Length: 153
Image (cartoon, rainbow, N blue to C red; front, side, top):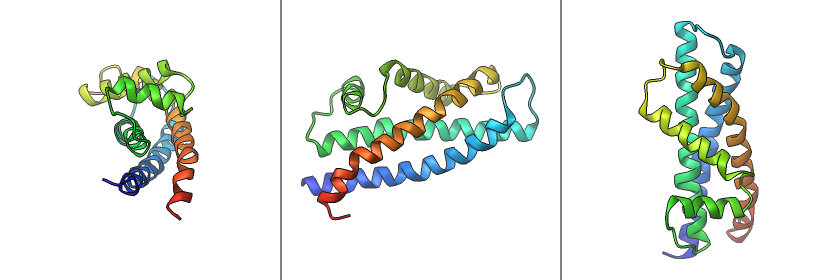
């Protein structure tokens, strides 16, 4: 593959991220109004399920697609997930590797557990970390502007 192919793949991933962030932002706005409490209505459970699903999707797109696409554009050896995350940290996409680890663990718990058990804790954590995902997405887009110029986008 040529570098231009890797750049096109990167911007396809960023486009997916933009769409996913849009929907996550919508759910976050709705669920911020619900707040953390002991009991939820069925409609609130639906909204929370949607938020957590969208949170997991955005974190996957960032870590599995966008970070790896940037590595490919910059001819980095893909390596392990730890390598990918460390390079993303060096690029300034997030302040704390520990926070990203918590986001990844939260994503895994969402994907592998039924949310109704312990929903307040999971919901609280998703509300806490969602702004961090928004910030990472913004930093990624700013960083990748240098490739837009090269490709005449």
